[in-house]
Image (cartoon, rainbow, N blue to C red; front, side, top):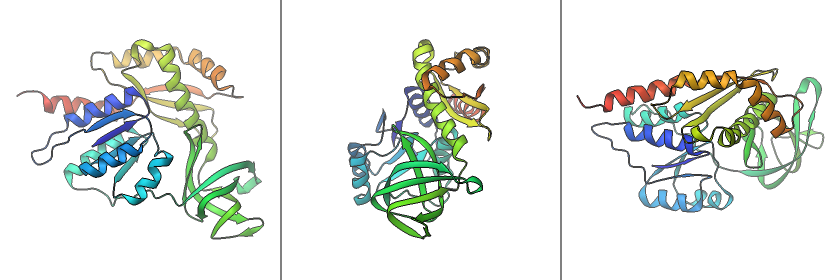
Length: 284
């Protein structure tokens, strides 16, 4: 396997968990692990070694995208750590769901985002490469961070509804754009803030997910603590005690009109998995 992640804390937590998985017929070998997007060299290494690329909160860079279309390389994207671990466990159990591969069919440049009342949010785009079709999956990035993702519900070229289009188009995403956008921005801002403000824990503390309420007033921040010697409950309690201060720091950093109230929680599913893995790995 090749592991790519957005921050060092997530990368170490994932690699340690994968390394602890044992099975009499399956052995996992981590060929390479690094922070950042999936690159051309990752694709070539995966092809040569018949390796699976696990991409956590990162995307495939522009040069690598063209190569992926030519090579038969399995890239699995995940945004939640315990989903990634479940995927790895599924390889062992032989109960994998059908593999869904992402194939880029078009590249869009967002020109305008506006509201159409009850019709929801409409995104006006220019198709710079390929084409977009109704029902296609779409990921919207800003400065390499995912702002939202969903499917194209309605597609129009000028005033006409179309099934597929290029050039100047507008589409309505079948997703709650606001909460997804706020969650993505918050996760990135908090990760950068933790590196600056919590230097002592920057190597072991990472954010696995952020869930924002539909009205964008409250956000639950799920954290992963990769060091078993650290008092998990104490760290989470300290984060909640400092939540107002952290919220103000995020407000200054993002310069938003409103930052949701922050509620920190331990990612219990991932923590339980680490405990079980340690018990199974302990000598008997």
